[in-house]
Length: 468
Image (tube, rainbow, N blue to C red; front, side, top):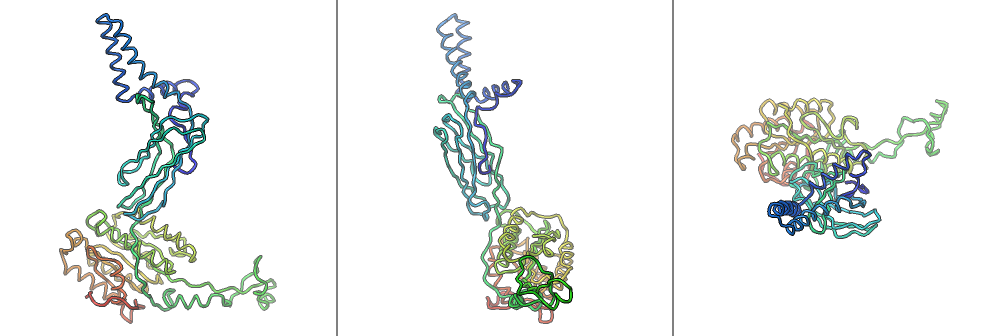
């Protein structure tokens, strides 16, 4: 429920239909709200009245009428109760990593001139977030408010609706209970867990990443050789008089825009490439790894895009070829990528052809891939992706090994796929169950990227050994 959302409390509104049909429907709904106690009293009263007629006992008839009238009077009182309340919900935060808790704050305001009775407040939440929260609110004075909160937690990624908020009104005897719901709801986004990664220095030449990026940044503020037309607000000290005389209008010198490092994070979501499911599956590790790598590189100032085997990219093809723009939008881009990874699911693609086509433009800078099971054909295609990028690092997950708790069904086949990738210039690392991405990140740095004649490589201090 969005902040400030208002709604009608139990008992109000149903009796105001112009032809009375909704009024009759409201009465039926009120009768349907009889609790077990109310139905028992009503049944006992009817039975007593029937017995009094059969036995000819007038006193028993009065008892039966009293028992039957009490729940009906409670229904009438609850149904005719008139007041208005406003409800709001606030999530803190609205985006949480898997396994973390979020707090939901509920607020109920009595905007009518009458005090409310005893209210039961209930919020609808998916079962994966925990039990349905219920709160009992005492009498709320006119213009008063009540605030309550509860916590939700999920180990599974996804977008989960919260709401609508429901209010239950009971009579003092517990004979009748009516429920009304607000219409609005909120959404809690559970994103993959992001693992902090160690700082690794990526070096490169003129492809817009690594040291080349810092050299480009050092040029920021230098005059560009191509002037542009004067715009309102431009500093007159930047007027290029020679071009002004040549074109007959005011021309100003442009500043060279700094060149950003670029990186593509490739996530293999093919169903046939991943086995098992659940928070500890290979696919969830790959999703979490892609989120960790994307966030880490964005924090380092890289222009990052997320690419899947379906060929779709985030932020999208309309944003600089799929990459982010200026550095100030890195936080928004990280949120967009995490929201995308929160709902990413297995694809039905048979291969990585669409991802290969998306990389055909070249000049992709750094390429970090999280791959599932690869056959020889797909391994060869992934090897060809390396020639369209600078440094390329692949984390290869053996789905069979993950499903068997670390024991690979075909270790020779897995080693052969890794060998094909390494011969193509990839820094290819196998991923076993329970392996930390931070350790693999350092191993990729120590192992180095491609051969010297294949392009830039990963450089810097890191862990040594451990990978053939």
